[in-house]
View 1 (cartoon, rainbow, N blue to C red):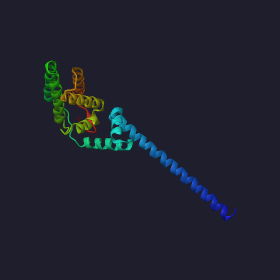
View 2: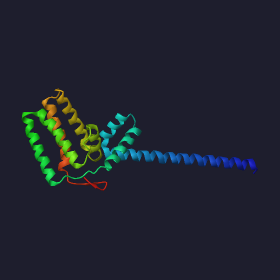
View 3: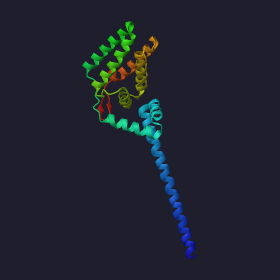
View 4: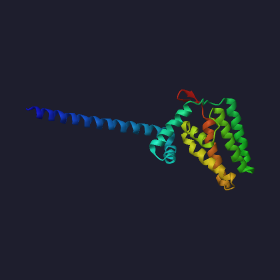
Length: 194
């Protein structure tokens, strides 16, 4: 074999090796992105994941926002309620439910305030609604959609646009979040008791 044939063979082997490395690297990158997407979709639930994709305009932006949300909440001091706090909040909920019979609009507003109080005692910052919902979605993805729906119905009520049926649904939605935040047994999340 002459020198030119050996150099051509070596060049061909180098090109093939480079292509193989690029293909393997791309496969690993795609697989890692899929695993990350699947993990976030599982953690936040499909509805919250899809809502965040829609709100941010892309899957990449949504995943960055969800990861940032998760990191933010990991630094909060979320804690379980004491038995005394549980009893107090459940008693307050009973009064709010009883109030619904005579003044459903007031009961919905009071339910919203009660949930903010529960979140505050648990360690969630009492910031604006969107931040509260985002924070709740990290550990309670199954009910954050209900919380958003209840809040929208409460806003409609404050504008005089909600029917009694709307208010009844809002109370059911608020109750589902209350059950998650008050009735749930303490559980360990990422090393933090919540």
